[in-house]
Image (cartoon, rainbow, N blue to C red):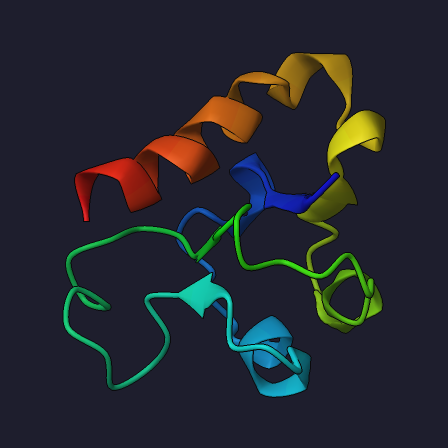
Length: 87
């Protein structure tokens, strides 16, 4: 069960979550290729260790454990996973 970044991140990309992630599974972070082209950040579900450090670091409450993603944002589970399939 991974964490998922949802709709409130769009246009924000605060990157506080990137700073606290112990396994560097949130992309594209500041300075990475694609950072300016993407409107939000994404968590790689295959690399996430479910530590939860990112959730309280998010200033716009956009990060949820996969099982706790609000119904209106469930599509972001696939959006996060698809980002890494295309990369």
